[in-house]
Length: 326
Image (cartoon, rainbow, N blue to C red):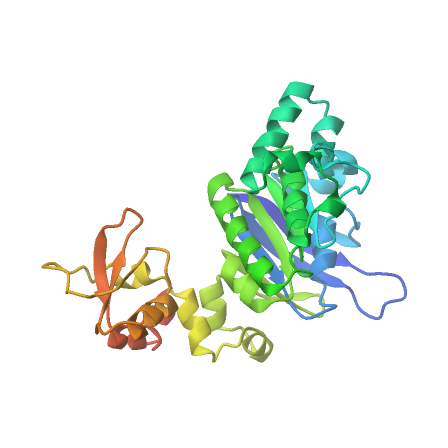
């Protein structure tokens, strides 16, 4: 079921030769993680800002949970949508707990409920509760970004909009926060629209990817389909479709062995990978061992099959592997 529907949405800024967003249409299913990506100036941030009416569209419409966003008071709409930006947007004169409590207070929540919610969110983002008494300047950039995420989650919105939230962070902190965001998404099942210019980040996070160029949506599909079946040369160049390691990182190992379950004893010295691991992880495990196969386990730890180098090679051949089927 679509929780967001974008219909022929356009934005033309005065004096600009072309539309910043040009007749964009797509649907977002409830609980999915959708990433908008494209080169600078392609319209991805403009599109995101039209979803919560920070920009008003020139034409077209947005349906939020079946309601026309244009028919709702802008302040009411924004209070129902979490919004996270690169600069965090934290109020420097407020303590961390006060920053997180901003929207619940605007909504008139009782004090006890707000305090409970703030504590839950500080736990969720992995900070000690005593940090609630600190000011933003007393936190690192990564910690501030976590607080920005907590504030966006405070009123338990169904929809989260995130505009390059990790863009200013170092690579190690960025990867750590990506992991935390993935874990939070799996736990809370929020609908997330996430803008980035980093293709690795997009492919790592997304259920589906919106690829934009000069204001137009040129492809909307799963990461694997975009890498294995790019819509045109622009998408092919953007995603690096010829990069075999990238393709391997998008293929889930369990998906490939689900029809190849093996009986018998587990080979001695065989390494194993978890159910969420990719074929790239399988190669790493194989290279680091003396075994000619790697075992694959499901979420409960049960062994569901094994992979060899030949299996992985076949996964990359469209006529033999997943590239032709998914």
